[in-house]
Image (cartoon, rainbow, N blue to C red; front, side, top):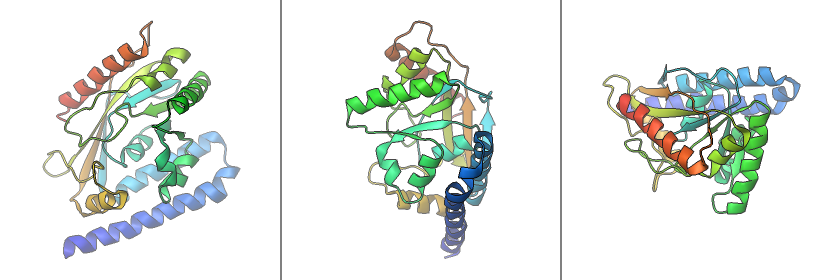
Length: 249
């Protein structure tokens, strides 16, 4: 009972924070400069993690400025907010995210590029958009697994989106994500969002969990240096896996 009451209280605070974010992007963002928007987004994401009782730990050198392509493993709906709380960037996300209540509006407001996973033609469009953003100095983040896992292993990386880094000739940085119990340090499955999980079910399980730690590990950047997208994806997967294993992800 106590656990349910605590989760309900956290849910109320998170919901109010999400609504506050929606109000901000609707009425305040149109008046802000890009740098101010970035600062607001990062501060909002940091507070969200606090509301969720998640302690953020960052290892390695975070990107200070673009252009840069971040390639991260994918565990949860939380991944985007963990990265946004650490460094400013745009994401590439599946088109379904746009339809999620509140979350979809917030994702669009942060400049997310949406891609239909069922359409090879749409992948070409998104890679073109990514290339243009990278050429103007943006930092983009992708989840090359293409779907979420339980965080205990790494799925194969899809190579398509790496073409943008090759076309723009910009560095790629591997990023490893891990969720663990704050008290014991053991991996936590509370935030996972896989198989038959629903978004609300995953959120509720996260709220009911004991305090969590989100560990984000940044590896060394690599330039494409003549590699094709498959070779680059293979090497990035090995780098992300190495970061995971080094951190006992």
